[in-house]
Image 1 (cartoon, one colour):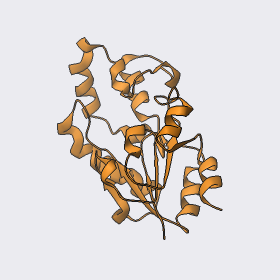
Image 2 (tube, one colour):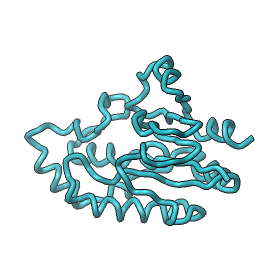
Image 3 (spheres, helix red, strand yellow):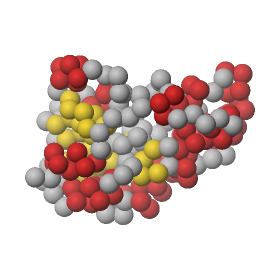
Image 4 (cartoon, helix red, strand yellow):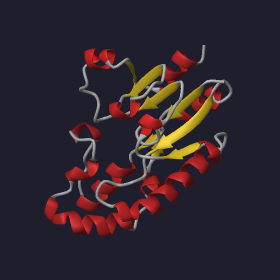
Length: 186
């Protein structure tokens, strides 16, 4: 049975981080307003210590929504493939909060994707070391390695990567879980 590595944030679920930033700042930023991978870059430097205090009291996954068709397609694919959820849990500016984040990610996956065993959760920041047949991620650098199929899931921060660059790296862009289903469930 072939193995699929699936990223969590911005592939399975999204919206939590942006929701918290908007709550904290009293703003209404939309994904199209973000030009960086790290949504917290929207926080002004002088407010960052206050942001960290606010953020540390929240579970970002309480504010996430599962992307359309994720559950149905993953459940269908799980009958044909071994599915592993590989997700980074260490925050760039807040390493000491990472243990909470790992717990929150685990609980979200356990509750929302009951057909995937917790034995198939991989918490790491280096996805290049994961050996599998298919990788699905929203961050191009996470698709490195020797997977035969590499799918870049379109997210706010990767829309400007040209098709030529993806082709050069052997990566195919996908815009939805229905596209993934069409490619992988034949």
